[in-house]
Length: 271
Image (cartoon, rainbow, N blue to C red; front, side):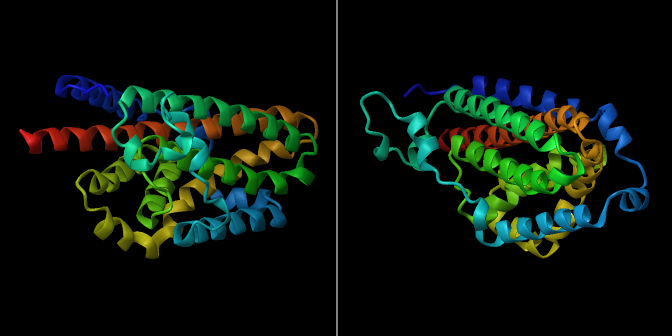
């Protein structure tokens, strides 16, 4: 297996830092989403609010136990199997040693695949407008959590661990946060890079509802556009595609950063 140089890893880390700086600007959709949420509550039918509330409760269950959203890692591990290796011989400790470029390749493949699924799913549920929106909310949440877990496995991390699921929810929040929120989340995630995830991040379990508040607000107002029958198909396809694309991109870059930093730390320790 090819050994990556320190210079290569540092160059790749700089690319991630460029991406982080690019997150400081908000798209039109996010700027529009800063409308007062009291107005949003008045516009959103109660049963939609209930569905969003249920999604938040399910997210809490996911952090605690993995619940119904926990994915099986076998299908992802098989993608890393060399030609002379049986698929069932591949484990996460093997993936930890895989070149970053290979990790990136599989993660990007999953990002494209899940984004296509989300686009079709959003168009399908958008046809019925208000009546099918309630179905779309938990499905999109499930797709978001699934792609983040799959990307975690691509970079050699185990989403069955509670601390890892907290990191995944942080990635979910990052994808829909404003500038201030993104900066705060990046600071939170430094504890993982410093090896303190078991102490600092698990201590945040009590405040998990605050972690997903931003995701809920951004998610809820966008879905208002999907309430229009027929036209909701276009909005649904676009919103779901952009949502899963943003979530997958955030997960890929943040997990990539972790793996690069860990390898650099190992190299410095061995010097």
